[in-house]
Length: 76
Image (cartoon, rainbow, N blue to C red):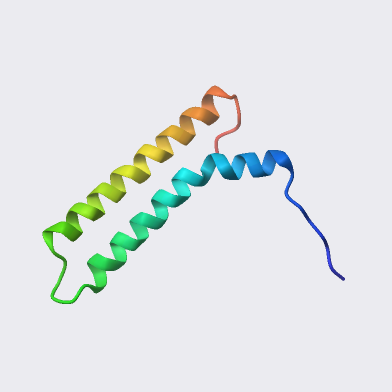
């Protein structure tokens, strides 16, 4: 039995709204992997990349939260 489920327009809009945060989280994960697995240890540039990625995740999370609060949607 196969269930064909297509996301609704509202669900697609929500995913699109969350996309900047998702992209920021992927960049953070990439930076964390480099720091943890780099040959010879992480360089100063690796640490800068990690801090920049952390700040971006926080910035995007705050922006998404602000949008949800102003639109009156429940914040999970």
